Length: 150
Image (tube, rainbow, N blue to C red; front, side):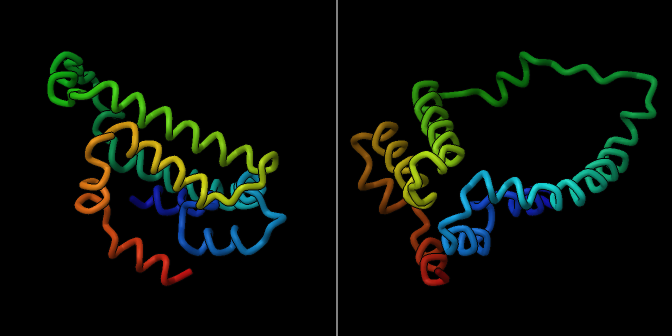
């Protein structure tokens, strides 16, 4: 959680203040934002990561006996139930991230790209249940709260 919060500040879409800053200045693109913020993030993330690895995995680093993983059990426990939907959602996510990095080329706002990716994912993974998904599975209170902030 700690590193995800620190890492979220590295991108224009990671935190609400970053969204406000990024969308306020037309000359700052997605990649420009990352390039300017990344040195500060590395300054904090590297020492925290080293500390956490040493603290959490101390037993595994000092132990003589290696722990073996049962890959079959992991696949059975964390099974993918709907591979086509996973492929569609993964492709849509990759497309959105690619479009974020291509901001200097197309100059579209990151919010529109994210919304397009969300609607494409919803439309192609649940073509018959789009209304149900929008009514029952979207946290509209949270979205409206953040919309009110901006």
